[in-house]
Length: 280
Ligand SMILES: Nc1ncnc2c1ncn2[C@@H]1O[C@H](COP(=O)(O)OP(=O)(O)O)[C@@H](O)[C@H]1O
Image 1 (cartoon, rainbow, N blue to C red):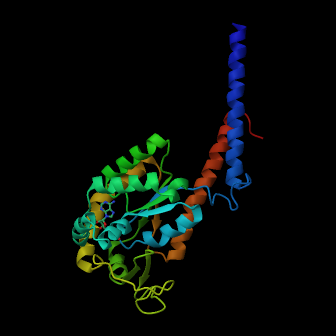
Image 2 (cartoon, rainbow, N blue to C red):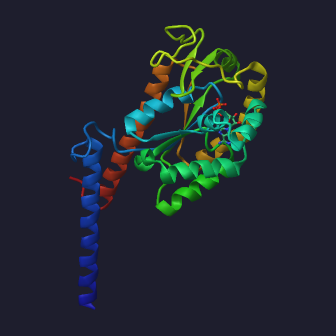
């Protein structure tokens, strides 16, 4: 009997040693002292989605997250518009749907994202998805794409804003198609009229950025994408942000979410240590 108990104790000790090492490694990563990151958590990567109605500010915030975490930013609307400008068959079909404020089929969108996640080297550190998933079916398919890689989503952030505030944001919006940079005729005008500040290239107004199509896009958003919020609320990764604030404030709220998450991992590590009686 005794040798079996000894073996069990040895096995347990081994497990505790491994756990201790893992906790120390996680703590070092959080504090940025493991030598792999120059600024804490900055190049640790992230896997997240950003949601919100048209004009909520996803396209303004997502590139900042991309830069902070060095991950890919997959904006499905931009990807579809690229197909439109290349005049592909998919682009031709998608333009019709987009101009009516409808949704392109789940199958097409899922394959588009899958292809990027598998082939785009920028995504090796993680990703921020903007415009996907837009339906519960897409959210489920995303989960099944990630699970074979033992990956899960870390955040589903919703930019919350009343529909009434979106009309003026959308109808005055100007876009630089190549970079996705957006301006606003009144709230954020380019230095030179209708020209991108960085490249000097012409800005455009999206063909679906008009009051009529916006109405349809908003109703599609509430009907089809609203339930996606519930989906992520159930998994516990959903967080909402007041997107009526100015962009700098929205960014601060986003950073608050990332920092809260860091402290909660730290707290969990602490709990684990104390449960194991290893708290220093
Ligand atoms: N995941 C998706 N599923 C279905 N359709 C999509 C998806 N992403 C983009 N689209 C189509 O592209 C259009 C523009 O997308 P996007 O630029 O993200 O717009 P918005 O400013 O409305 O968030 C949508 O109205 C929709 O027709």
